[in-house]
Amino acid sequence: MKKSTIRRVLGAAVALLPLSLLALTNPSSAASTTTISVVGYSVVSSAFTSLENAFTNTAAGQGVTFTNSFGPSTTQAEDVVAGQPADVTVFSAVPDLNLLVGAGLVSKQWASYPAAAVVKGFVTDSVVAIVVRAGNPLGITGWNSLTKGGVQIVTPDPISSGSARWNLLAAYESQIQQGRTKTQAKNYVNSLVANVVSEPTSGSKALTAFEDGTGNVLLAYEADAKAAVTAGQPLQIIDPAQNTLIQNPAALTTTGLATPAAVAFFDFMFSRAGQTIWVNEGFRATESAMKSLKASSFYQPKRLASVASLGGWGKVTATYFSPTGIITQIENAHGYTS
View 1 (tube, helix red, strand yellow):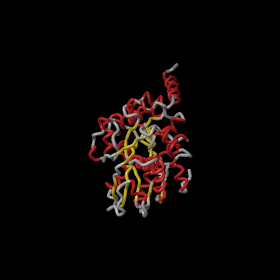
View 2 (cartoon, helix red, strand yellow; view 1 turned 90 degrees about the vertical axis):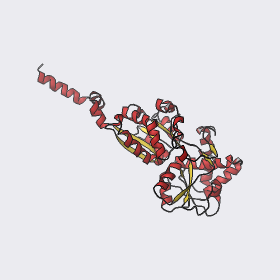
View 3 (spheres, helix red, strand yellow; view 1 turned 120 degrees about the vertical axis):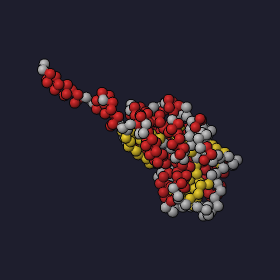
View 4 (spheres, helix red, strand yellow; view 1 turned 60 degrees about the horizontal axis):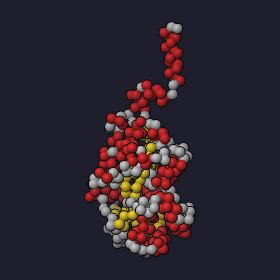
């Protein structure tokens, strides 16, 4: 066979190769076209801007680009199950990530991935912040102030938002932490929800509504509240004596595990450099050696509940957020249908 003929045959064969195989034969080309799809809950949007910019300045991040989708945590998880591309995911709470596990899109062993195993898959911690107008005109001092007359609360919708579920769980537990009975705690949450004037679909939308003038008290992620104050919004953060530890899970999907750049970025989120960025964005570090990082900038509640101390997410979901759960029943009684 003539050389020219051989070249034509080889050229045709190469043209038929999958792009993934071509990328393996030309690493520089693969690096220049690698795109990582990130899906997360709304509050982490600005943090990912910082994380992605920092990662693209590392050797592993050369030539990497990102697509981002942020919104209500449960809605985002449902969208991924329905087909939305995702390589790296971060959700407000474990039940949302479990939707992907159930669909076979994330491994059941997601919390054991090497970079995340030491912190059981939780990339950040946080707590609930009570946010008021500058000067605290209502004299809000903590959870017990939220049921008095004149209080108008903005908190997200627990059907779509993980932030909302954390807020209402923390509200309930604040009463238990003060020695009150379960019935008293339930009655307290009922009175709190009676003062709710708006339930936007996500934590970020709740903050926007509050900044635009809706209500006079906002229940929010600590990071979101701090960002608003830093940006110059005329708001004030009230740190309640009782709180609940918010733990945010992160996981690689099956497509992410098959994409070296996505794996490298995921590792970066859990690295010291990545955790430093999270802390600078108002989130609490999760790795024990990192917890001292800017610890003075985070208040310490006198009492701090956790999902683990409450029996795990299976028990918490059944008790509070199932169709017959305490908080679901209260929400329905006030016209917020499930």
